[in-house]
Length: 322
Ligand SMILES: NC(=O)c1ccc[n+]([C@@H]2O[C@H](COP(=O)([O-])OP(=O)(O)OC[C@H]3O[C@@H](n4cnc5c(N)ncnc54)[C@H](O)[C@@H]3O)[C@@H](O)[C@H]2O)c1
Image (tube, rainbow, N blue to C red; front, top):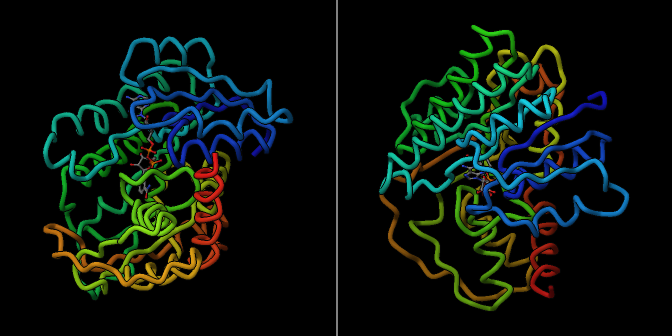
């Protein structure tokens, strides 16, 4: 991606903060927006490293506010990476209005600002939750799968992605949707979607017991955050990505028991898991076919779960030391 002015929403969150650092390292100027509702400024400490300073601006702003529109009008970024969201599935079930207000209306706010102020491209972070629980014969999930989402979160993320593509089709701007599998890595908190790695890492490092809900044979496609960030950077610049919805995952189904074993090996933890009841509404198996992203973006994941878990735990150990 040639040097550009880019804006990242949700920039102090898990994926957003990793993306900001990568964009700065590639020489871009970055406007980082976050209302710090769940994000932490500490996540941006790497982005403030001496060799990166001068190209990062942080704005403590809610994307649904008039201040956000004014910021886009003033800065006129070339690309907006829209990651700010309500990311907790359980919150979406308990408070669906709150979820839709940010995930759907908030995304329309961002798109309106982009359209009004000449932003070339909006890249949106959608979720595998938007594909519900497809039958075994439809796995791995590709972009043609049409099973309905199981949660209000899945619905809101899916709808917001549809809005991004509709704006691209009807206005002088480009929309790109990356649908992410279960992302994990440094800066992840223990809530949110792929949080199980962060939960296991945190508890194992403390020597505390860890609970696996259900039989542990449920599978997920765990994709390391560096690989996800690489997909975003490509999605910001590859011309052919305009109008595309692409799944981002490894194609490898990992059981929760396997993940537990990887985390235990990386932390030297030797307690067996506590077995809890299966959680209602949980998807049984989830794995992604990312061929479309490979074709369009030239993207592929290069981090296996063992390496990714080791890197995540090394980060967790370092941050626990302060
Ligand atoms: N983590 C995953 O496994 C995963 C999987 C699929 C999709 N996603 C999507 O990726 C994006 C980033 O997720 P994450 O895991 O980094 O979550 P996160 O909670 O760490 O990051 C979201 C950020 O958005 C900020 N935010 C929330 N409301 C805001 C508002 N009104 N204005 C400005 N900022 C606001 C929060 O403070 C937080 O920093 C989300 O859109 C999420 O739906 C994540």
